[in-house]
Length: 206
Image 1: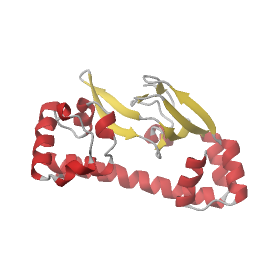
Image 2: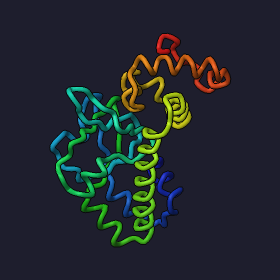
Image 3: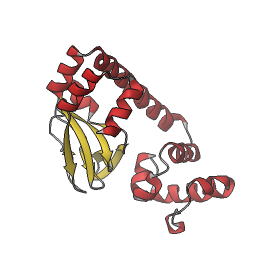
Image 4: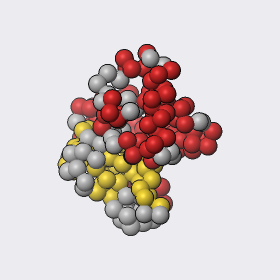
């Protein structure tokens, strides 16, 4: 759990007592590729830190998956809306790779927040970040052109270009796979320096 400890310390430094409580409250869980962290209609009663692996949160529209979020290493994972409202989830979360997470239940997290000022700070900061990211994503889809969306994605999630099928990236960026292919070719042609950042990209993916 050293990666979890390091992540939390960056948000709000943990005392030895804080970490002991945290260590006792989080449990390791493993998911195989294709396993569901939460299924449609399920209740989101836990929060997990991704130590290894990758997940997607999506919804179905006219039989097609619409990717809303990716959760990779170093991120917390849950259906935040379902978690906060305690309503059945309409957005499944599925593992794209074999994954290892550290999980805390809703009850134990609430107890940590009540007993630890550090955890109270962590919960507040994480809630603020989740809100900011949700608004930021909505604004990007509303106002950014396709090229800007792709460059932003490349900058923020460079490793996902090699780990996620192109059609999923296209869905996340709200464009067709064909449009994404054209955008990628144009982006690398107009910005040759970007290629060095993403060495190893299979040219057939472009």
